[in-house]
Structures are given as C-alpha cells and as structure tokens.
Amino acid sequence: MNGAFIIASKDLRNIFVSPLFYVVSGICSLIWFLLFSSRLADFIFQSSMQMMQSQGRESGGLPVHFYVIFPHLSMVNLIMIFAVSAFTMRLFTEEKRNRTFDLLLTAPVTSTEIVIGKLIAGVGTAWALLAIGALYPVSLAFFGAMDWGPFASSLLGLALLSAAYVAVGIFASSLTQSAVVAVVLALVFNVMLWFVGVLADRSSDATERTIIEHLNVGEHLQNFMKGNVSLSGVVFMLSLVFLFTFLTRQVVESARWR
Amino acid sequence: MIEVRGLTKSYGPHKAVDHISFSVRKGEVVGFLGPNGAGKTTTMRIITGFMPPTSGTASVAGFDVFENPLEVKRRIGYLPETPPLYGEMTVEDYLRFVARLKKVERSRIASLVERAIEKTQLGEVRKRLIQNLSKGYRQRVGISQALVSDPEVLILDEPTVGLDPRQVAEVRTLIAELKGHHTIILSTHILPEVQATCERIIIINRGKIVAEDSLESLGRRVSQSQAASRVFVRVGRASDDLKAQLQKIGGVRAVQLKDADRYEIDTDGSKEVAQAVAGVVVTSGVGLLELREEAFNLEDVFLKLTTSEESQLKEGALT
Figure 1 (tube, chains in turn orange, red):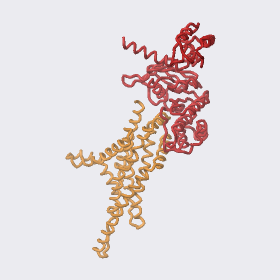
Figure 2 (cartoon, chains in turn red, orange):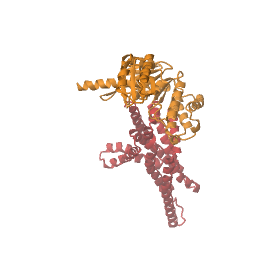
Figure 3 (cartoon, rainbow over the protein chains, first blue to last red):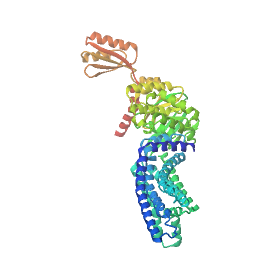
Figure 4 (cartoon, each protein chain N blue to C red):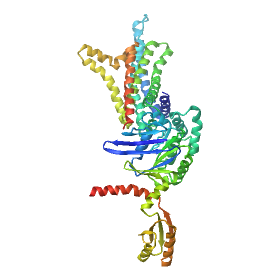
C-alpha cells in the first residue's frame, strides 16, 4: 500500500500547487457566501417577525439548522458534484496525455495501489473543499445558535457522498484521454446516481419501491442531514466508493493488456 | 541477466513482434536497431512489464516478467520514447518521487537523486519546473529518471532523440560510463549511436531478428559477400577512360561515378588497392583532389540486412 501513498502525495501536491483548486474553491465560496448570507438574512427577518407576533411570549424560535444550515449543506452537495468532477477529471487523463502513465505502469506498484492513490488524492481534495463549505455554518457558533449533532452527521454524510463522487470521477477519468470527456462523463454518472430517486416515485410495486429507496442517494443524505446516522446509509455510500474504485482498477489493469 | 524466449506480440492479425529470442549478459550494452515500426518499442515494453506478450517468455535477473512483475520492475530503469515527466514538478522533486515509486530505501534516496542529477548534468536546472525546460533537458531528466533507482537493468528507448549534436555526444559518453555497472539495452534507428556505444547489436526488422552479433563480426559478415572497404576519389575532371583503368586494378570490385567528379570504388579491403588507385589517378593526370578509404560501416550492414529482405518480399509479391 506504500505505493498508493506515494502516488497520493504526488497528486495532492500537484493539485494544491496548480491554480485550478484555488479557482474552483474560490468560485464555490463565492456562491456559498451569496446564498448563505441571503438565507441568513431571510432567517433573521423571519424570526424577528415571529418574535414580534409572539410578543415576548416564550417560544422556541425557528430552528436554525433546518432553516439555514440544511439548505446550505444541500447547496454544498450540489456544488460538490461539479467541483469534484473538475478536480478528478485530470487524475488519469493527465497521466495518459503526458505519458506518465507509462511510468506508473512500469513502476513496482500494482494497479490497485495506483487507483487507491488516486482515490486518496481525490478524496483529500474533495474534503478540503467540503471543509470550506462547512465554515459558513460553523460561523453561526459565534452567536451560540449552533446545533452540533445534526451538523456533524450532515457533514459525515456529505464526506461519504463526496468520496463516492470522487470514485465516480476517477472512474470517468480512467476511461478516456480527454479531460473534457472525463468531466462530462463524471457529471452524467453523478447525476444518474441522483435520478435513481425519481424511479421510486414512478414505481407501483411496494418491494420494488423499497429496493429503489435503498439505492436512493438523496434519501440517504436526507437521513444524515436530519441527524440519523444509519448503518445502511454508511454502508451504501461506502459501497458506491468501493464499486467505482473496483471498476477503475479493472480499467487500469486492462490498460496493461492492450 | 535478460532472457527472452519466443516472444510474440500480435495486435489483431498484425504481428508487431514475431517469435523473438535473445539474451543479454550482465553488464553488457546491447543496441536494438531497426527501422521505425520494426518492433523495438514493443519488445522493450514487454521486458519492462508494461504489457504482456501474446506468447513467449521474458525474464530479468531470473524473475519472469509475467509471473513476478513487481520484482522485475524494481530492477529496471526505463526511458520510454516520450519521457514520462510531470511538468508541474521541479526536477529534484520529480526524481525524488520516481525514486520513492521505485521502492528505493529511504536512506538512499537523497544520495541516488544527487548521483542521477550529477550523471546527467542537471545541476543548474534542479530547482526549475520541468515544463519550463528545453527539449534537450527534458530528455536528460528522462534519462535521469531511469537511472535514479540505480537499477540493474537500464532500458532506453531512443535516448538521444531530440537532442542537439553536443548533447547526443554527452549522452553517449554517459552510456559508456554506465557500462559495466548496469546492463543496458538501448534502441535506436540512428546507426552511429550503436557504433559509438554498444558492444553487441540486435538488428530487428518487421518483428523479427535479422542479425545478432558483435559490431566487428557483423561488419565482417557483410564484407564476405560484398566489398570490405570503399575508396572515395575526387578528381578535377572525370573521364570514362579513368573509370576503365580503375576497374582493371586487382582487388577492385566495382567503380561508380557519382556526381560529376567523384568515384566510389568498392575493394576487397587490402591495403595495396588504395595505393594502386592513387597511383592510377595521379598518372592519368586528371588532378587528384581527394582520396580516402572507408571501411564499410554499420549503415551499409543495416541497409543491406533490412532492405534485402524487403526487396525479396517485393519480388515475391510480383511473381
């Protein structure tokens, strides 16, 4: 496994040295800032209205988690789909284009080590971006309005889900030499994950419905965001990561046979 | 050190490498020579474990390339046709990365990187990004990368491509320096390269080995069927009379008039012939401008071996 860490540290270094990460995360922060601050302003307005209506009577107020943090994290998730695809597209295409893939394939490392290395690098980058996205809700802690439990479980869900996006992105990247094709493929695959949910609504059969619901990324993420960390949710996300990592390994291994 | 037995690689119906067998002893420098598309790169890629053969075996230091690829890869330094470089890394960082990837022990990495930089004279660019380097430097970084793990076997696929003549000479000196310490296979389609660096040549054409021998005996082999040396004569004015006179000299096999004033005289290689030619030219009074004798070089061997087969094939197709 040592080979995986060597490749991962090389890729992480190259990602954080190149301007791409900073440009993408800059754009993401800008979007998150605009949406988060307007949500927050809206929330403050709503709650002061409610306070006025209740006229000093004791009331719980609006839960900030559901009104501000929840939509923000959903937005983080949406943006992650695009941002992760942008980071992962180059992980394999660049190696192939620069012919450095030859170096990896003739080095004493296995295909599995190469793919795991890429996965670590991709997940590291995705989590760095996720951490930036998480800063906005954390800032609310200064005003004492923070509900840490559901926030932590939402972050766990997002962390797992973005790892799945990374695995999908790397898989797409392993299929082609062109970064553009890789990013489009990654987006298509990731969006397809989300469209499984649509099938559930169209299905009439009860068992079929339950099966599809278990495969529904949205459903699982909702659970995490509500604060329910379920084993099935964790296992589902991890199996997505495993599935696409396995597929990538097969693609890399097959490159040795052509 | 390297054993190749019955190696075949087919791409569909096309056989890139067709039943090749050869072996390389420890410390030997072997030149792999052949026109473009002869199968040099494919053979090298199989030895490095980059791709498996369709049939046949290859082993390095006793390890089968297919059964034990990781052990083989640890022992090989490989420079592919296009040097595998990360443009966004500095030369030093890149070499350190390759050393780690090749599983060099931690304690040796620093000294081996130093050695590779020194051997390929990359000292002045060591802190620069590879993407900003000239083609010659990149090629040298590529060679450096192959060297950095101090491998037992070095496989260099056209190591001097894209270098200027001075750098080509430097690379050749470098390969000569590495001789003995490493076992080296290098491929090229440039003849003087093997002449300058290799002890043994394997000439490969259309996926088959057409000749395998030391430099001298290859030369000898051709000379038995053809002239052993060629005398070039340049005169003030050429005449048919002179050509006839030259043909009469004992030991001369053929005389050709090239351009308006140059003769190429194929001889059997004995010293007296050149002297006799000089005598004839001087006495005929045509004004001797230049006279030199050249032993048949590898170029002729190569052309003969790789083209004769082709012409045979063409003839076969016609009849």
